Length: 371
Picture 1 (cartoon, rainbow, N blue to C red):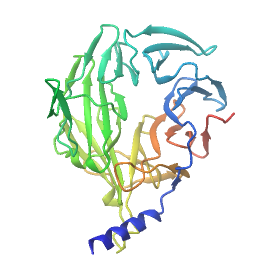
Picture 2 (picture 1 turned 45 degrees about the horizontal axis):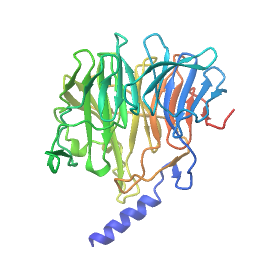
Picture 3 (picture 1 turned 180 degrees about the vertical axis):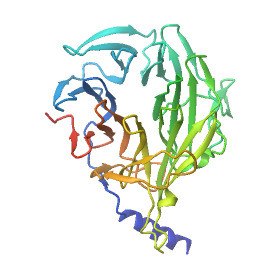
Picture 4 (picture 1 turned 90 degrees about the vertical axis):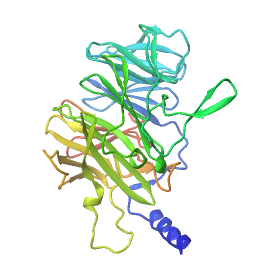
């Protein structure tokens, strides 16, 4: 009976009404990083190329070759654009002529996974396997991880291994908040997820064990912040069925503000109503609302003063390609990051379909080969 039920669940998954399609036949380079600047949208693909689109007319204005493999991109407090490489170099992009001027070269050929600037404009990097200050040559890697479904071992005395909960793992999503803390998340599919927090002011690893959160049931896909310095973590997974939650975090206390179970059709008695698989989210300063991606489309909601979100508004439902989730029976989230422009356009990065630009009425998709 157990095997029959599993087969039924898998069958229902294969024919679920998600607005995504299989991308297993798509082997071309994909956009993997995105940055919204003052006048441009910047993106990097999996081959290390840089692409730039003009924000006003959405035309592509620059594409680099593969002579140098670029791996990360960020902007400082003066909106200067910095870009890292897979061999330990940092460049500044001149937005006037798109020239790349070398800013610094690390002592070792580290892969630069991410770049951050705090409010004092101090530079921090994510490299294997640490948070790194290249100016003062300091690194931090002793992050204590909350219990999850994953076991990590470290070598000691050259020949032996032991379990540990203190280590640094490369994040899938990272975000620096207004208090200069770098939030780094990673999901291990059905085995839960983990969170690492680094304070760039005190230059120290912080405790990431949030009250009332079980990391075996947390599948973190994004972190963002509202105008009141509340942090939000979106969590979602498709493992036979869809799950989705959003937590508000303040003073190391996490409060559940959205639960996809609250929006299931309770009148149905089959597995055809699969709930909502929640992906990344963002806060819009223009209307003070929360936006988040799902397999059913993009939603927005007013953030409640207390309790959970009771109403959500579907904005649009793009047709996207998806990948299989390697650590679960289901698909991985197609949308990887959401940002907003100053003129209130929603920009989102996808795993297979490029970058989407939504102005409230029309959706335009930007691709490497688009004009």
